[in-house]
Length: 136
Length: 140
Image (cartoon, rainbow over all chains, first blue to last red; front, side, top):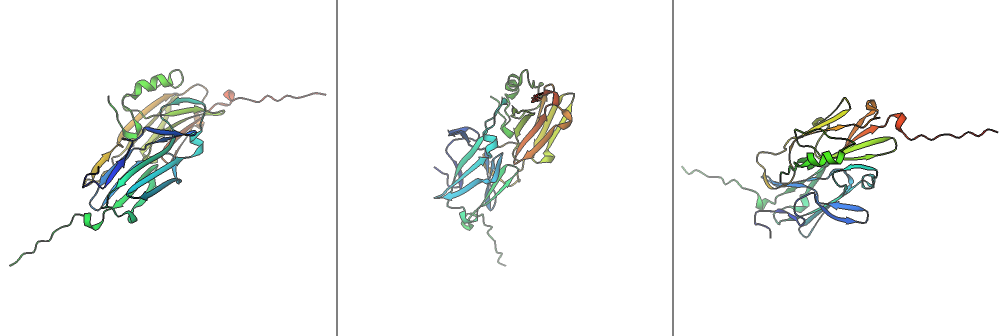
């Protein structure tokens, strides 16, 4: 269940960077993320090392934002390992998005292997300053 | 268990690293957290790779001295003071890792590339170590 004031929640799979599953020859990982709330928007930072723009898909459907990042083929099929301290594969993660988010206005940007999503709040959710009139 | 999430750094890492690289890239005792590495061998080179999402070139430093390759990095916490975090899995901070290079590396030609949050260091083998095709001449 989503708390009233939490408009962005992760779905399933707990914390980031575990192996979620293995499909055919490729592993799928849950990427690490930060979810932060700002005055007028929420932001999600997702670590997607090795994912290029063309390998990334983001979709919002029925209040769930799903993202999938595919690493380049070359990294997924490497051989001749001397040391393997982390797995290489695709990334997938889903977030539940509340009514207070203006889904039409979501923006995404990929910078140095980090996806930055900005989810603006609807006006009804924004903090409002109440003006106090002084009556003389 | 101490687990430092920044950059996939794992607090208990040093021990694991030593055993993984033993005999090949023995790691020196680490003072700071390391970073997870993958390494593989190709015909003409070795490659070492690390995932460093969020780091730009200026956040990384790579140096070689006496057959030891050191790389350092730092991710500054990118928090605006007013943000309230609902979830925080990524970390910040600095790391350092030193690898002892195997024999037969052409140190002059080592190259590092940073692309989409993945750092790859290419260590070309010296000519003498590369597989060589022997040509067969026929007489007659």
